[in-house]
Amino acid sequence: MPKLKGVPTLLADIYIAEDGTYHMKAWCPYCEKFHSHGEVDTSWRAAHCFKGPLKSKGYYLKLNPDNPTNVELQNVYKKMKRLER
Ligand SMILES: [Zn+2]
View 1 (spheres, rainbow, N blue to C red):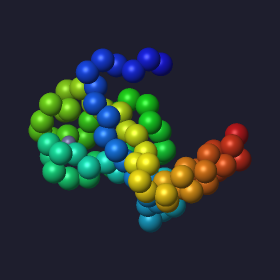
View 2 (view 1 turned 90 degrees about the vertical axis):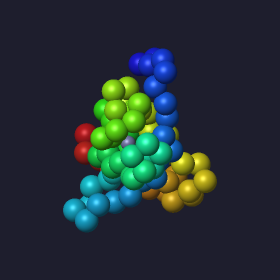
View 3 (view 1 turned 30 degrees about the horizontal axis):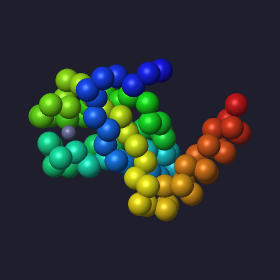
View 4 (view 1 turned 60 degrees about the vertical axis):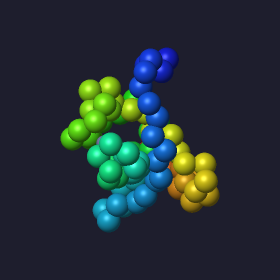
């Protein structure tokens, strides 16, 4: 799917929740907090914002390239998803 115009991208890190499910968290400069989203998925996300311009637009999540753990966790996640099929 082509990217939507004017929709910004937030850098995100992957983390594993207490129940073992994979999530991404992105720092939102408008809400000044992290927004968490389920699964490892960089397609368009409905914003979890309570204020600011992203609230109506949503955003894309992009894996933070400066965090090497993201690559590791993304590989494990992909493998897990393949096994689920
Ligand atoms: Zn926000």
